[in-house]
Length: 128
Picture (tube, rainbow, N blue to C red):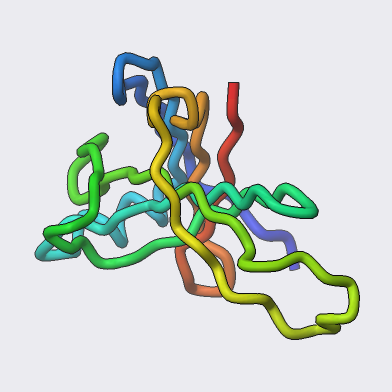
């Protein structure tokens, strides 16, 4: 069966002095529009024995620095480290350590793409 993609909307906004382009599928925009409170798209950047970028979604909290970018959508940046980096750790993920950075704007994504995958919000981001 051929799957028809719904249109994608694009907006450009400013976060911490940096221009950010956000693309969102119509399905994802519909999900966000139906929410009572904003959802936070968290751009996690792991610095350790490897570098990992992951965009996840979470509920807002008072202690979370986030920026509103669209109706019912905020963005936050989360730099983290593994507590230790050991190949012997196997399949278990080591503890994560949160750390502050002097210039959080340097880690703000250049672009964010949000869509629906298997009925859930999913996304990616690019640094620039």
